[in-house]
Image 1 (cartoon, rainbow, N blue to C red):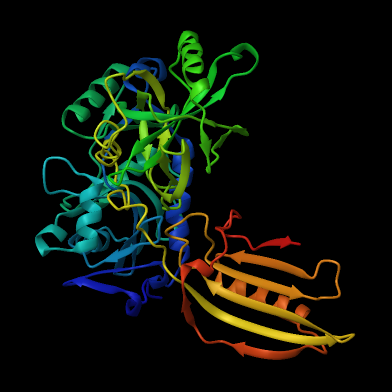
Image 2: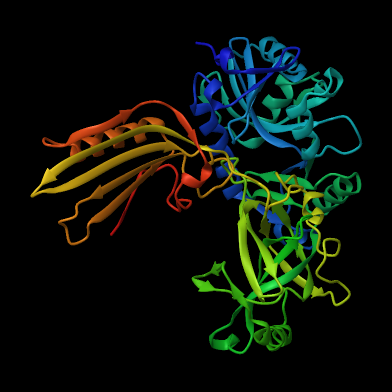
Length: 514
């Protein structure tokens, strides 16, 4: 069975082709990428340099260079090969694919799923920005040939899930990819103690790498990275309780986009002394303002404050995607200084903060697009749409898929029932939108509540069709006369969509309103 439906791939340049998960004959390959990333993220412990000595007793460790690239799985079966990431982007026809296929064949491997990092090898330091740019735009064959794959784990070999100790896994990777140029095992050394691990980490950072990854079957999996510092403006706070009454609990901070909007960066709750916490509460409690947006942490809403105080924070890592490869969307706000109020603009991709800590106040910094610029984040990780004007961005139009209306006369009054199904086309741009929606309207003038509505959402076309059939069978029973029924596909403005659904996208949900 082939791996790909090549009719669903887009040829970019030469043999290089790209497609979505729809191009995969086996869609579970995307799940394999997502599951591996999710399980690894759950196991991996982030550490900074001063924690190394405490966490690593004498033992056997594999320390690897942390490559700044895009996590992918390399999939091979009977000569056919591709890479797929957790977001479902499929790529094939690169030099690394051809090289890997030859190495698998030489090693006698018929099927394989390998975890690794797709990176851009031309230049001093690989950056994920370069991977995205080259893989998306395919400007030249030379640049495409510089895309490489650093393998760091085996998921399956010849259909058998890998369950061997990491030392054996590493040996298999090195044997399979021996002599490879564009595909190879990630640079790794064997170490025996915390001193060697710290020295290796420092060497990686000095060489311009993100850090290092340390693996031990006995101790665990660790990501060692230097902390990053960012300047951000305080836009909200929560107050402490019990022994922290009279102090702040944590702060809500934001950075500024090029368009002047404030993009919510996250919460900062660590690094404060008790004196800091008292001082911040005293300073901020008189600056509370109105806000159309409410941010909640630990079921407590933030008091929003005027964006005047800038602080420096440090973070161990910035995460720009979920384990399923989706962007981490956060609210963009407009500060209306005339009305002393925050106004909602929209949600857009930014980052999640790992281990944020307060460092110091920055009284020398002010509310402007330079001092608290979003580029502090985008210089570290790639953030989609970061350079776009948030106020001018338009979501894709929705598409009506089915519509049915019927009437029934009872006691001289006309009752109306209407079903509409549409595809939002927004699920990849705005995390709170489902892929498919059904809206049911039931009007009966003789009822105590004349108008009733029902909304169902789903991420599956098959599931939403099944829900349509169930609702239609229940709604359009004997005596209901159809006015119109349409299976035509029609594009409609985004404004026809309901408010973004907060329900999980993978489950059908039901919501009734009076």
